[in-house]
Image (tube, rainbow, N blue to C red; front, side, top):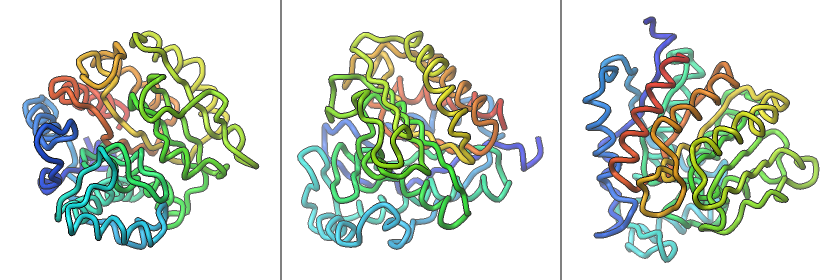
Length: 312
């Protein structure tokens, strides 16, 4: 396997230092369990290790106004929660920049041809962060910033974002709702936090049609998800013809997850990975979002990366 055909993996142990407090679902153990499962896999040694570095404040501002970035920094310094479910600690601002930076370095490696695709095992997650509000455990919108980074620093024109976290990626949708150069797809349990992501939310102005939501009722299973990916997402992505695909890879739709009621399986996530990889036939980066069962998230991360490697 040549370097240009590898799958990249971005992770930094400092991600464990983002302290959300005892009993919080978004805890360091999610990444620890995933790392242990990956190291026990038969492909760990084949992954191309990518060293995350912090995103600059200017890069964070690709998706967030500077006043918001300053607010996050102040709250972190004083350990003032940014939302009722989004606690922070003094280290959280720098770790959030490092989380975004992990996704940026993964995208950079793909653009350089060092790897064909990559997965970033990061925290805090990002897809609920709107331009000016932290919520749902998210401080900065890692995937949205990466989409803008690809466009501004690498000249990408059309970027597609596929979000299969069980919660609607409201922040990502808000950031690109009127931007026809970014296609956003979200499949999510409905009704469920944050309450957005209806089928009639399709974009505004010249971007109508570049937002695609697939709300799923509780009890939906892997077969239901796969049908949506094949019959709804596939034609839409082919029509958009993206130059780069980003995946908000939340694994909280897993049947073991305590925060939702979708009957997704580990193999189901592998199949979703395969469908997206087949459609895009090229540059792809995924980043961890949710997933709160340690067994569910760790097994799903392994299956997801294993399937990415088939297309690298």
